[in-house]
Length: 194
Image 1 (cartoon, helix red, strand yellow):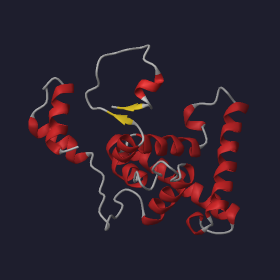
Image 2 (cartoon, helix red, strand yellow):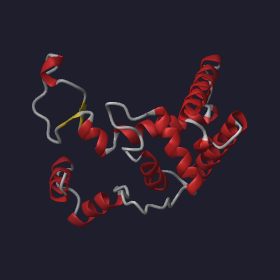
Image 3 (cartoon, helix red, strand yellow):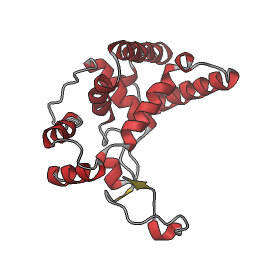
Image 4 (cartoon, rainbow, N blue to C red):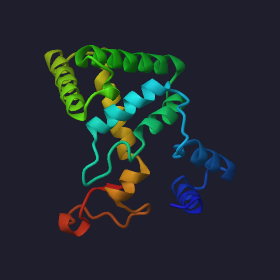
């Protein structure tokens, strides 16, 4: 989508209540750096590499784009400092480092240096253990949940909100037509991204 179209649609959806400079700042502020020379600004290089490989293990490239194609690591590096407090971000980074250490302990080497099959096996184990912990304690408070689930949710959010996935995986129409609750699936073909 061109910047001009994005501004037009943003103004339409917000009822033209924001100034042009505010809209431009929002658009520029939410842009993920896609350059080859990208350097993380929130994460360390090691944390970004871990998030990148973990994301790709959870959402690998198949007939659909993978997490690396969607630049999920860059999305999280850009968005986390904007949406969360410094304290929340420090807890998040501590959680990432704890997961990195757990992977190293369990695998015998850094997660990013392990073979993809071993990574997947480890992720499946962590995933199962995390969900088992929640099922064992349904009254668990949000802050007591296993960190892995929080990271996975943000990875999925970054993936499904990326332009790559929205345009290549979902049907995309920034201004959809009328509401039809009984439309046959064959007519629309797949889920929609707005």
